[in-house]
Each structure stands twice: as C-alpha cells, then as structure tokens.
Length: 66
Image (cartoon, rainbow, N blue to C red):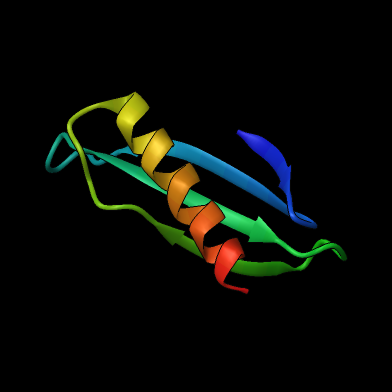
C-alpha cells in the first residue's frame, strides 16, 4: 500500500519471517517533504493479509496521534 493520509504518505507491506513462518506487517510514514517521520511494524500474525491490515491500521493510528 502506498496511501496519502492527513498529509503523510503511508507505505505498508507484509513480510514473512523465515524463522517463525509468521507474517510481520511493516510500515513507513513519510512527511510532506519526503523525510521518514516514523517506521515500525505490527505484531506478527499467521496470515499475510492480516499483517498488511495491522500495519496499515497501526500507521494510521500513529498519524492520528500527531
């Protein structure tokens, strides 16, 4: 996902952990000038789509707190 949200650009993606087999939802939030404002991940889950959704939700929650 690459989405605009409240003046930020959010990029979220699922990433599989080879060791555990779980999916990590990772995300990066860019400020209006393109600088990375925040980058993190959601808790690991057993489904690729759930990982993506969790990362997206966590990124939007971070923006909402700003």
